[in-house]
Image 1 (tube, helix red, strand yellow):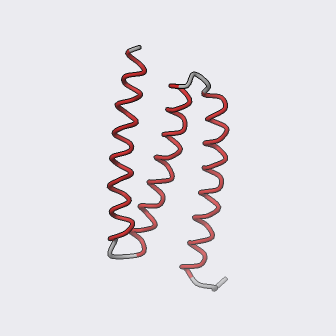
Image 2 (cartoon, one colour):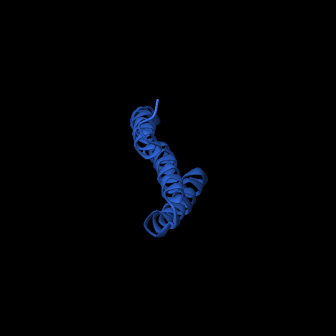
Length: 89
C-alpha cells in the first residue's frame, strides 16, 4: 500500500516535469532547447509507463511497451539530428 502511494507521488512529479518540458518545447529560444525537451519528455514517458506497470501489477507488459517506445524515440532523434545537421557525410 505504501509503495503504491509512493508510485503515485512519483507519477505526479514526473507529470509536472513533463509540463515544464512542454513549456520549454514550445517557448525554447533555440532548436537545441527544443530537442533537449523532446528527449526529456520521451525519457519521462518511458518512466511513466514502467511506473504504471508496477501500479497495475503487470510490469512485464509495460516494460515491453516502454522498450519499444524507447527504440522509436531513439530512431526519431537520429532522424531529426541528421535533418538538422545537414546532408554532409
